[in-house]
Length: 378
Image 1 (cartoon, helix red, strand yellow):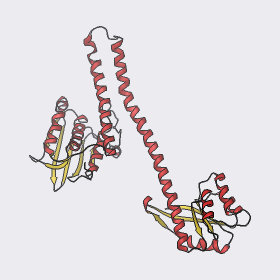
Image 2 (cartoon, one colour; image 1 turned 90 degrees about the horizontal axis):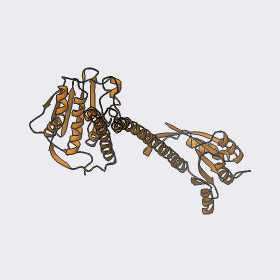
Image 3 (spheres, helix red, strand yellow; image 1 turned 60 degrees about the vertical axis):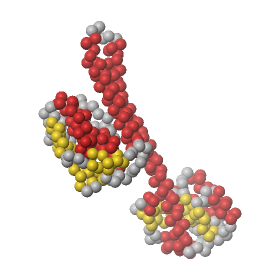
């Protein structure tokens, strides 16, 4: 419930009390903002009293009589900007004319209501003003949130690039200054480490570009009938060398052919990320099981590993950008922190769901569904 303050300034007691009776229990919903609005009402019988109340506790909406004893309604309107408060004013007058409406609008009035008016007309004018306030505040909140997200994004991106870049700079300095002597073989490890760090930065940039294209909707997609088993087999081939170095066994459980209507590159990115992570975060001598099946028009993909696992508190944030679980087991494992966030966004394109079930030291199981009729098509 969102409560807006409304001040009625009118020298006629009957008009003030009638407006209060009409609006006292008035509730309405602003559909565009999914917000329910209630009103907190106050009244003043003169322009002077109205300005005092505005100065001490500014309302969101002001119902202002045009003709008042002493300071007129138009003079109150003229003085509103000096209070520094943003107030939506509905001018009420028995002397409605185009000239009056133009003058009131120039002074900042939001709307115009002519006496005599019905309760329905009053409610409509107030509801319109309240909706404007709620939607404006939502837009301001979203703009501030976008600024914050952009700032956080740039800050994290700078941090993620700074570490490998500093390492490469240090390695290059060793080469430039011939710190290790004149024997080229002594620099082999330095060159390998530099290449590894550069690969880390390259992957980060590629993943970042992929994520940006997915979110913007500018990534070209072609929906075709592709074989999920064949895509999984290629993903396994891509990590075989890494798996062999850790003696990790990979096994695929799937029908001989698994035809699925989707963009092939989407499926490749999803399966490649999951299989790569299952090997990367596995223990030496562990195993990875990839299970694929098709239930009517829904593909189900499960990737289980016997790796280091993830604590329950960390699983909730695992699919966010730049999230890498850092502990003694992951300290030397390189990654962009974007792979699983890309998986989640791609899964959402297919009206699917992705989840993880994990236990530290006992491995992880990633499960997802994809519907064969994606929501976004090229």
